[in-house]
Length: 127
Image (tube, rainbow, N blue to C red; front, top):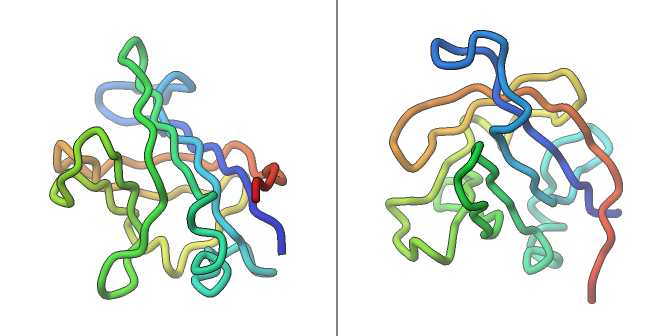
């Protein structure tokens, strides 16, 4: 199984009625044959599963894809260091990551935002 690089861009909302390709996430995760995050593969390759949050003119935030108690997937940023600042994917454990699909993330400002999957491609693996 290979790792996949997934790009999420902000879907339309009250602040961005047309959505925004300048606000979102790129992250690396192992996807199974049904395009779900594979927890077994993540156990082996979790150190390679990074996330980059890009948000307009703000400085990019870089962290890792983590699995929280209860099986929830989240983005953890070393700069914050506090688990309360983790951004949790809404139902990421059961969600397929396919181009055109929508997913939601509870961001560290405690706002649930919706993003569209705009690309899924093979990621370069580092040993």
